[in-house]
Length: 233
Ligand code: DC
Image 1 (cartoon, rainbow, N blue to C red):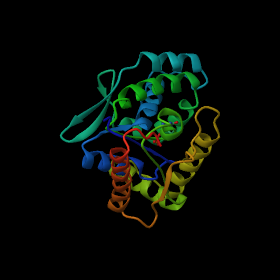
Image 2: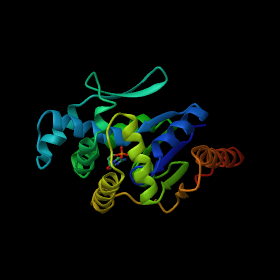
Image 3: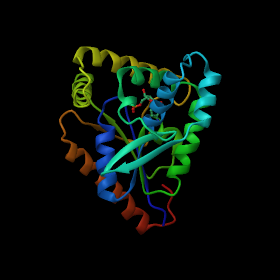
Image 4: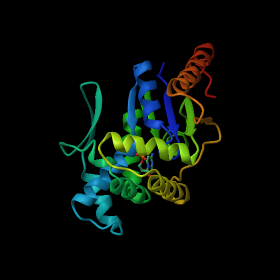
């Protein structure tokens, strides 16, 4: 039997990466951060001085880029054309640009192909904005993770400080809300909750509590598949 796909979507800084990583670790599944792929394209566009308005060049760039996830000392690293860009893709500039890049149709097409290829065999936890709606609408487990704007800004500012970026919570809050607005109002695969996704509001939950909820959803799903292997619902 094919192992499940767990799709985790939600707005910026809702804790998707932290939670998805832990769920994948516990289940022995592959973890895929699709936001890192959009960030990688943004980083490359910045590096090559391609203006964001030049969609054809940015799409061409995305089409020829090699994006890999590699594990080094238990940590997932993002490698673009042989270069480790794990930290560089997290700067506020790359964040802003990644949202603009993700609205380009050709870029989404290319990254969607890669994401489906990585995930099609199952046993994967994939996080992003459109995983349960567009990439894997038949994913066995779908979660929409969110938290209040204040909580998300506080968490993201903390993460930025950890990688040495001095972040002001109010400024981070502004950046996040601009990005959410752009991500949810674009015409291509906008951020939205899939009708069959389970909503988890994380303000008052610990990371482990969220992880346990998702593992429970996964186990329920596996049990129902075992009981009725022909079922597609
Ligand atoms: O998850 P993140 O904040 O690292 O994602 C960076 C940007 O990429 C985000 O602003 C929207 C975009 N994105 C997307 O459009 N679709 C995805 N599946 C993942 C990310």
